[in-house]
Length: 395
Image: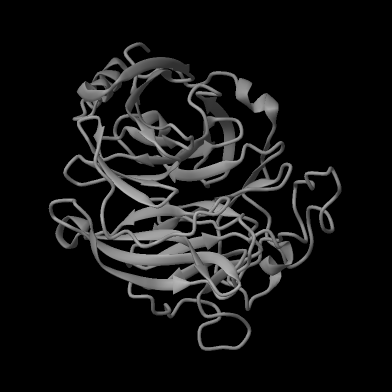
């Protein structure tokens, strides 16, 4: 499978020329209700012309997730346990009704996902670290956002992992909503690698539940005794990115390796992705992990990085602003503080990588495609920022 190393940031420029008509159409698409409110705007070169990055707001405390609301607002989670709405470059007061979270290590308030019918039903989903017997673990809740955006109501916990621990790492955990409205989400191994190989443990897994918390009929262990009914796939170290390709419905995840071995996978029902038996990374001490990079019974990643870029999220670009990026995978990175753009061929195989904004904005935690085709990103810092990426003025 393809791999990436430090040299990947110097990929030769390709396919730079677009027709004048395509450029004019794309430039017209950059108009946004947020652009006029930007506090700062900078342009950066890319393989397909310049891209513009605007700082929409700052002062967010370790923002973890961002979603564009249908009416032009933006909702952001902060890891200490707050939700805010950003409009006209200003962040609201924290919303009321947010469930209590356990802010411990990497844990706290994590992902936000909007229900497909959000414009009518105001329903959203959250992942968070919760306290309980034995320590802390990942939970999924459903709630309703008030029409005046003051807070949440009808908060209901849909899922709570079965084994808690006092450790503060590898909670996961983003949500991808399938075409049928069911929820896919990941939970890391919680710092205890062997748990990723136990089919009766939610840790180290991609999970799949219906929007009401029930178990989908397609789950591989539903109705049996070989594994927990919520589990979709196992052998994942710490999946913090998950998405569906809007065009063909392909499920993709990105997960942290140790010292190297970050992976992109296409999780299949009942499959095992190897951690910690096989991996392309080493322990932070430099020691080998597991039994190598391949073993019968374990799936290979679609792509991996060595050294690690510490991926925070991923999305598949299907938007009008950057037509030349159509089908590309975009990955937010924490350690190298960049946005990785990965090209795919017609078969879906991942090829060349371009690295954008390397070290310019801090730890990029999340990236999503807004309705106008721009990107929205947040930086996981004490003074975190909400950023908008659009087409630059020059080719």
